[in-house]
Amino acid sequence: MNKFKLSALALSVAFVLTACNSDDGKAGKDGVDGTVGETGTPGVNGNNGVDGSVGKLTRIATVPQGAEVTGLFLTEAGDLFFNVQHPSDANTQVDAVNGKPFNRGTVGVLRGVNFNDLPDNLADSPVPSTEMERQTVMSAVGEYQIIGQSNDVFEGLPSGLGVIHNIVSGEKVVESNTPDFNGFIATGDGEGYLFSNWESYPGGVSRMKIKKDQFGKWSVLDAMMVDFDQVAGTAANCFGSVSPWGTPLTSEEWIVRSSLDTTTDASWNDPENTSTDGIEAMTAPDFPNPYRYGYIAEITKPTQAEPVVVKHYTIGRYEHENSVVMPDRKTVYSSQDDTGGVLFKFIADNPEDLSSGTLYGAKLTQDAGSTEPSTTGFDVSWVELASASNSSIEAWISEYDGIDTSDYVEGQTSYMTMADVEAWANGDASYPSVENGGSAVTAGQSMDDRAAFLESRQAARLKGATAEWRKLEGLSINHDRALEAVGGVESVAGEDVTRAYLYMGVADLDKTLIDDEGDIQLSARVKDCGGIYRAKLEENYDLARIEPVIMGGTYRSSLDGAERCDVNQLSQPDNVIVMKDGRILIGEDGFQENNTLWMYAPK
Image 1 (tube, rainbow, N blue to C red):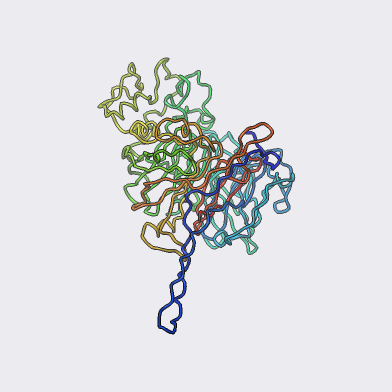
Image 2 (image 1 turned 30 degrees about the horizontal axis):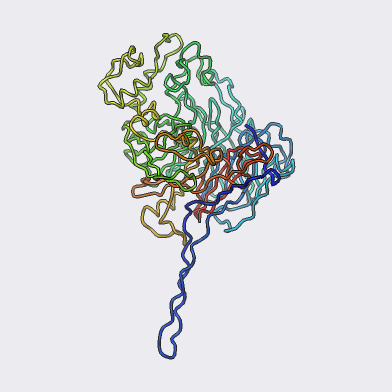
């Protein structure tokens, strides 16, 4: 990926966006009644205050060359964890805090600062200009402390942090350099378990038991890689969340290709299909079943000696970036990080139990006559896809176990086809024959709902949901503000929460968002820079409206005339966190030489 350092000398045209559709500021206090004059006439009330100004971006930190800002997690105590994902291995500078270079994937924390008690105005961390600044973490507040880096060994983890092994032989197959989501489960004051995703093929999740001393420094007491063997391993663990009942939810972003997903004519088990994307290295000697990957996995019993992983097939199979559970402990929103993706909703049958329920896809209606990304919103309705349980979906998935290259027949496929999904969407009584484009496994069988859960994107599209998002990234709410808002309480600690929102990062407003087709037809003006959207939480935590909050800004270089993202504005926002006071934290996965961790005040 090319990186561009921005300079005032490179600017010929500057186009900088500030906040869009930001929250209104609080009204000023009424003036005090005037004193009674000689005639006994009361004084006049003072005028209401002026609405607050538009929002403000503050550069909280920058990460080293080559790295993304990933893993934003804010604890109840105000500790902010975030990661330095895949930094350049050419980084050699050693900072004074950590005494080591940032040339490996890094899990860390901003120590010495409480993000639940930040002042309203902070000075920006500078845009890095020296080699030291470009190769280390620079921050406006606190000090960035490394907790662990790729391949670090700890008590209980001699094989190294982020190392993935074959399920059968135990042989090392991946040394991951890509830490992503962090989730902290507190077990006491200043101590607990930090879960971190490792976004590789295959992937994994680490658990480090950490403790903070009186000076704010964290130490690792022991560590482990969570055991995914009982669910056939895991793939590309991207962002995630912690459920309201205290279990990490890890997202399998990468979806193992089947014949429906590939851009070639080869099926997954075609001997000519030479790439199984590392998954076969994890499952060998068994050939991998593609339908066992691409889900939300819940890590239950997270503080016990052996956490138990449960994959929730009910939430659908697609490129999961993030899922977040609402305070009702039943409603789950999930983002698909791909071109032509869908915003999904899942409603569980029972609170705190994601093993059964109903899956929905969002249908968007764009504001009439509007295409400007910074002002165009969408009304939202929900298309019901199907209801099922993990156990019923597991039975469908198991039909594809044991299939390998010896089962391949030229011109046929053992996996689901578009004709299968179309037959389901049309309400056909049975699956089509192989001659009519069906699968060798299901041809002629009575129709069931497997299409909704195994090929969720195409199922949602054919049922009328909008499948046009491009790199729909992190989703976030502040749980307490959301709970109070939907419950009708007017304030929490003096803050207005009658309007609580689900925030959504969109890294790239390109391709299906700007192609002048379908439900979403935006202009291409800031296509590469991305932006942040939000949706007000309605009754029962429903979403009925999505609106832009802030978009990236562009400039045109005087050197080559190319349009690029402004270093002082957003550049491909990825994960998003909502703070208790309503401000949001945004991590970049962009084109800058040094990606930024931003704080945005939306009012």
